[in-house]
Picture 1 (spheres, rainbow, N blue to C red):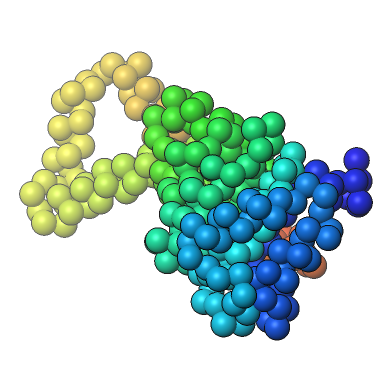
Picture 2: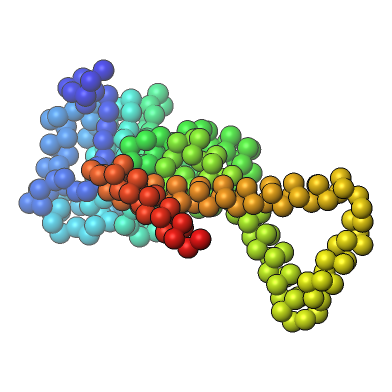
Length: 286
């Protein structure tokens, strides 16, 4: 079904910004909604206004931002829609208003309806969530149920976004790229261990605790003439070198892609140019 008259009959939409004219009164806004939507309930709207002590005769321009948000929410939730689309309903309001908005959403939507909330304030709405969708630049990067995330990840939805949000949103966000980013973290730990080991050898020799000949003698006394052990040592060192080389290339690749994503029009050209520049810089330092 394409967006149009038929979808407007079953979808109740709350935009992020105020869309009513400032000269309108609250009662005029209610009349406006009642004229447009057959499923709108005046009784429900006036009842919710009464509960928060808002006079329907007040003009919208005389209301605070929090009260304007409450009025818009009341109008949205006074419909018997099949789908409620709420765009950032709790952003930019005080905690008391936020609690009221959430309570109004939960207690006033139809039993056979679904509520879709777009928000960055996950901690405030998480206890009400059934399903979760993470979207970045129009692409879905994660879809799951809230309970499944808690069971499989061992953390809340809010913690998942806080701890893994960088790898999920700052870098390219395809699943395969997310796996690569996790592998990159593992490789960086190996690289750090490599730096620590060889830095330790350097400082030991620099501080003259052991000379290089003494270190060699210690290693030779352990390995002796056992060629298999020496071969394993060689393989280990070669593997470390390969991992370092692979890590450097992955870092260069992701750096180039991240810089390229700063531009929408010339993303590919900037990414390739950045990667070539990084490669030339690395070769010039050899």
